[in-house]
Length: 246
Ligand SMILES: [Zn+2]
Image (tube, rainbow, N blue to C red; front, side):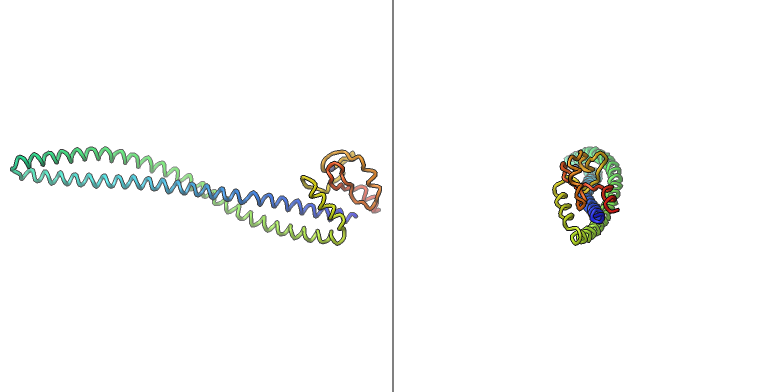
């Protein structure tokens, strides 16, 4: 009977280990998915920021081009002014020069604004990029770690599964009655373990309640456990067995 207890306790250890591995595995996929979403968000933000900077640069280029073509117009007009003798044409050319100069002034103001904007944006982006790159690196390492952990946990689970199968086979062949009882108890209880020890004062090691029918049950020497009337767990009375065996 000692053997049956040993086997059941071993099976119970494997079953609990298996539950623990299942729990750990369940917590992994979610965290990896979360990390992926975070990285994607940051990468998207970096792309957006880059596009905004590019946009400002293009506007600056456009302004510079417009300014230089206005300056060309002014140069051309001034050149024509030195040669013309026609007062009407002279007046038109002078007005054109003034218009273009006015445009240039407006564009200069715009350009200055854009340049400040670019400077701010680039400084902001540089900080952001550095922070996110560090974070992304951290997250990618975490991902790698979690992936490795998944592989390890799955490997452990398979090993424990094989051990459970082997132990169940032995129990099925030699102590089928107690295996059956173990399985039934496992379904009934809320939380493992289902095989527990008797605590001092005839207290169940599972639910911690005092047993009343303790003496009646243990009279039968073929009964390797007593069943707790409160939680239905199987209670091992180690001392009692040592006495019977000797
Ligand atoms: Zn109990």
